[in-house]
Length: 118
Length: 112
Image (cartoon, rainbow over all chains, first blue to last red; front, side, top):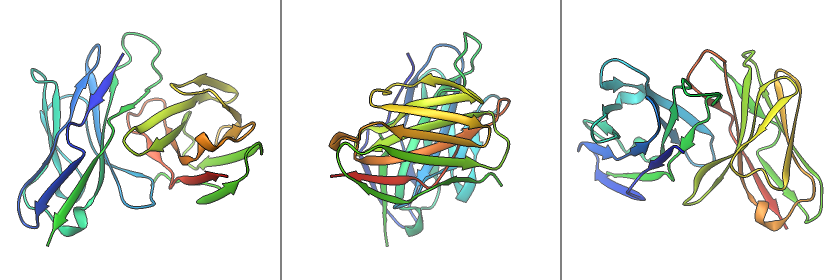
């Protein structure tokens, strides 16, 4: 079974400082990894994904994430946080489907609330 | 841009009522999904559909059913609503060859 852990329920950073939101995963086979963001009373918006290739993935709104296979991690980062980045962030994983009919089922972490202070 | 819409943003229902949540996508995607979101639990998959009239149970299907009569529409049905089904319900769609799921705005359901 595949799983995702987001070890921090909340992350607080000052505006202008770098931010990191952590994610570790477990999956059989090669992982597809995703980050989504949710603003209050909204659905999830896709930020970025890792499928294959370069371990550093760049996404929307200046976010990036680094895939680390040996540590089974996919941490979300941004060099300089904005107050408008404050939201709920979800990491998600699926396997590549090579092992069976997974139909692209995503497994989500429990979410991390990011608060950026002015 | 992919657009996924859900019929209601907020719903209030009484225990025992039959509840229909509708989801429509406009990108001809084969795969559609229903999740519920609860604080501290993230998103949990209720049901998904990989084609018209096809469906599979997710992780928490009990108390729910689904219908996919047309490719663009995926309905979630609560046969007899209970208070523990109070939650945020999110629909998503994905094309068969793609990797990314696209989400609707969500329906916040309160069962009294």
